[in-house]
Amino acid sequence: GNAEPGTHVGPSECGCDGRLYQKMINDLCFNHFKEEMGRLDSGTWCSWPETMEIYEGLTNCTCQVALRMDCFWPNQLVDNFFMKIHNTYFHHCALTGRLLSEPSIGILTPFIGASMLITLLMTTVVVWRSKRTEGML
Image (cartoon, rainbow, N blue to C red; front, side):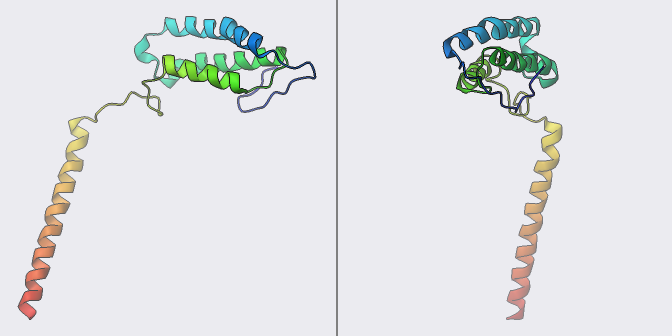
């Protein structure tokens, strides 16, 4: 069966050969992932809808190899493996899965205009209140 991400898979009493596990996830999981990502335009790598299935396949692969090799999952080797994947394929992606970019002028203009208007309005209110207070003295 398939283990769901977030579940913990424990080893049997035989234990886990960490070096062999690392070799297996590189040979089986990473090579397949690399092939699948290579089919995509690199400009879409930060698009979660485009890469979700490939990424889930990679995650499931590392878990299945762990099950067959009596290794805990997730483990430090898997964490390091995914850090390398992220540094190679997703290092320029924002956490939301979108590339960071400046908002368009059409979006910025209302915010800038509203800020300026509020600043002018507050300045006018302060000046008006101070003149009114002076007149009472």
